[in-house]
Length: 232
Image (cartoon, rainbow, N blue to C red):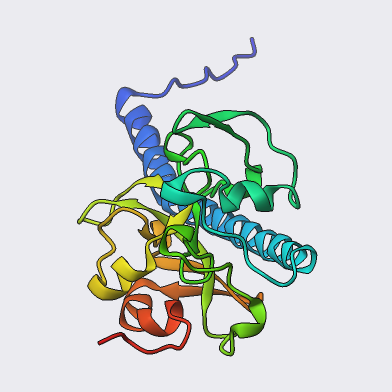
């Protein structure tokens, strides 16, 4: 009579060993997956800035070479991100900001931020020494007046941040004078370094750069002011 060996079931100890091995493999893989996702989002974010740069160039060509205002008086419409949206992919919906219906392109939303903290007007802030504020009586800035186009950051990742560096929401503008004088990331409407510790930056001449936060802070006057000099 032929007998067949019976298959041996896993013991509890063996099963626990297998579970532990799987847990270790998952734990080892998660940081890699997280890093890969972060890099992918950073690449997409840089792509958004590139598209914004192209849109601004088109706006300049159609508006006598002058940049849009950051906004109307007292932060009322029209907002620069809404104006530039007409040269980008179509908005996906209508939001209300300060009682006014606004539409901005999805390109204005930074994939490095969570869905719940996107700002209605976008997560990329304009340098308001380039996209000036009409409250101060300044005319729209002419691109021809800028002699340091490869050194001035025009649009960058921006946000409202805590003193600990946590971004609580995106921001559509950068309060350049406040940041230049204080050099503090933990404020409203400041350059934001997101999860990469870099400020993703679009320069006036259209080139892109990922600038380490410490370098951005140290050289903030060179990156933001029109003449590259600190005010006394």
